[in-house]
Length: 196
Image (cartoon, rainbow, N blue to C red; front, side, top):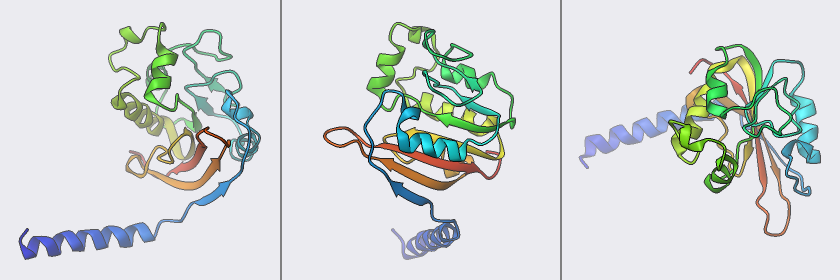
């Protein structure tokens, strides 16, 4: 690589580092708890939701049985939700910049997604929930439907959240180890800073 190009690359990296330094560092907590199929009933997660989900105007595209959100969806018709459709189609049906918060608790892996969607019309979807594009599209829709200063609380095995590239700033991360061979549940709380 030519010397001038190396200097440009280093300068760009240094500028990006200086910009990142100005971002607040997220608060990180770690609290052990037994696992539960219904994520929102795990005690440290239930406490976090009680603290963060104040007010109305919350959406949950993967509601399951115990969601505290007011606008709920779950593909399973037996789930306690107001809508029963594919999560991406549900998110696309909602108006832009309208909601105060989103609880984003999808299947945590491609294998879980395949199991959840098997026999529930996956073959009818244009973008399959077993592709990374599907999950990226869901996150883009979450960014679209949230008001500025709205919160996205994400659950999974990573701390990616919705992401800075979609206009979000990470405020806190909760690690919930379950012991033994169980993966930790990782919860991120982000605030929308700008429209994507």
